[in-house]
Length: 303
Image (spheres, rainbow, N blue to C red):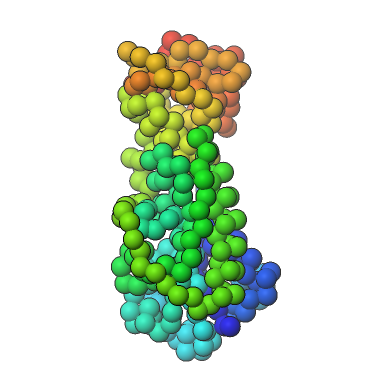
């Protein structure tokens, strides 16, 4: 079976390499254009492009799939297209030229869109997973080939859940391709969406319920980190280790700091957070920040 692979970031590159290591015939790869990174704005290859070059697989970065993409299909004559976090919606006539299947990091129809892992965590979900579905013209609404469920721990971070979903996703993709074509089932159940992360999404508000605060912090841990005002500057917080239900009257107050972290008041209780990152500095424990005179008990977050 001849496979055309479309993807861009690390999540996609891991799937691509896993297919190659399991002797699947990836005949060509399509990725988004390379972008400048870092202070020097040096052009960096996409992670998927790096894997394609590593294994000498032809890789293309077309600006238009409707023109250049169709030529790639005509030249390499793939039997199926696999899409993992490519970054753009596929549209006719390119979409009509081949069957394309997407590996999506949610249990569709929940969390259709660009940021399903973060949104699931932010909303306090207990279960998520991977869905492989046939791409249609709508937003992640095509019929389903396979699903794999993943349980979410109470304090599990984006980084931890990402790795779990990555492991399930690559194995489910191999299962799908080994049994292709599979019978497809329509999406059923509650539809929800996972829009792209904005800067406003990263702002933390300690006047929210303590469970919401806990979920917001872990949804963006370790990257990019939630932001909250502290003495006129935005700092980032990471590593929620506990939360306590209690009647509280003050929000954002640093009630206590020990080696486990800082206890901070919220609506309905407290969260205990281990790490803080000040502007221009590396992430450090609250305990070290307190000992260094950067923060003290009785101070407030949030202005």
